[in-house]
Image (cartoon, rainbow, N blue to C red; front, side, top):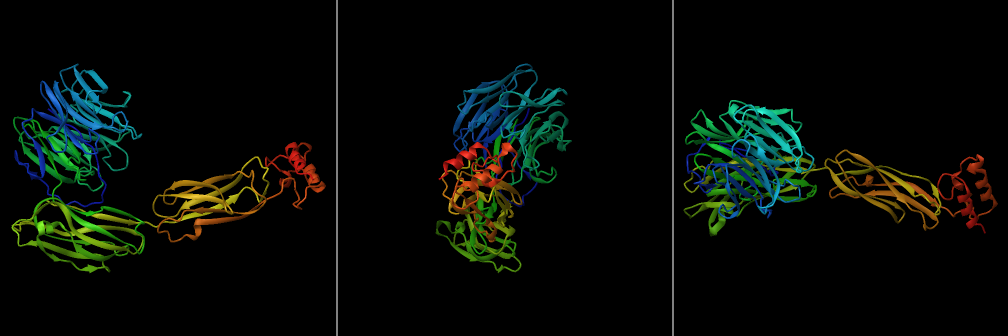
Length: 624
């Protein structure tokens, strides 16, 4: 029969060295995987946090009369929820369909023409959010995700008759149809995700009977990638399988030349194969559903797929995973002159006895201060031989260090720290922490393969906020103004990353206002501050604006700007001679608006740009 979907991604900057063309035989799963056997024609699989406890789970649909959908915790045995007595459940998806912040679960049912259903349940397993019934053809793939990139999730599902009447539809959470593809020959699997890594989600689905897989942009017409000549594609998943910060795509094929089934993970170029599994098939149907996600909750995405006739679902964990941790360091902090540590770590390895690894880095940005042995091989009190590499800060290289256990028969299994490296920041810029010469040996001194190698990345940004201009609405004002005194500030982010900071306007020691803003690198914006002059004492005030000094900012002189002073005058004293008298009355009269007088700001005691009885009333109020 068919397939399923996938989700998730994890952020790192990475390089992969993976073995390609790994051939698996039945029941070959070891501690590097989790497997369920004896299932009744498993179809869809999905990885996600169904019970909303912060840990991912797995959902499996078994395609049979009286079939079932089961959600397991990551231990593989604890059942969170199970639906039974379902006629031919097909595919399953975990995601927040109703956009309430809690994940839901959707699955399709195929019970003959006109009886197909797709149902979305809350995580309590009983509350139905939405259900589509009476689907004429055969509902198959289902996926929850933000297809139209509006910040709200939708649901996509396929109908797959053995004709060119197949269709793929996308519905909003209120049930509104927003996209549809028709006249496809047997669409099965569907997935929503950012396949081309442009920050916008796409949609992928198959024509199983035609051996095709399509990836469309969210406009519904632009085809990003198409595969042809496949052996019955049944499942598709979009996610960051190799944990390098870029999404990949996994495709299952149920029968390649009638001999094998195949699961292939491609980079987003659609041609580079990251990993491929080939499996013998029973009868005529092999791998179906596929999902990418961190099932064992170790911070690394895994891959799960079902084998229909063999009755198996297997999750393959990321093993022999050598990486830089943290994988991304963005500074400041750290700033120029400060130090920081990174660890070279190993994840999910078995019987590691000896290892070696080196590193290259950008010598204009970083300086290596020291390297030190990690704790991993010392476990259980073992003695180790630590052989540090040499540091060359001119070329940015650390030759490979090595470490081995001694006096014990076995290596160490699990996850831990191999080495610690201390760097000092020399300048602004980017540096990949590229692992080199990585070699893992077991206790028989046999090379451990395949090895996934994930580099780290350091970005030391130049931070520079500049106040470009500061203008005030007047050089003189009165505390009787009925309109605010305006201060206009133009501020620019002259650094190399987006920054969030405060800009504050002052009149001498008085804070006029404070605004928090976020500016992209190179962007500027204009801010308006309004000063209510009521109750302000007469006198001269210095108008200035200050932008926060960011951690590590070097050029701080332009974070402050002064625009001279404003004099708050005595109301009614137009000529500023400290007394309200006939001179001031005459200035007011000559500027009288209704008589065609020329506007004179000195007589505008209320600041409304009109000289009238309101100003005269103020003058009278201060007349001796």
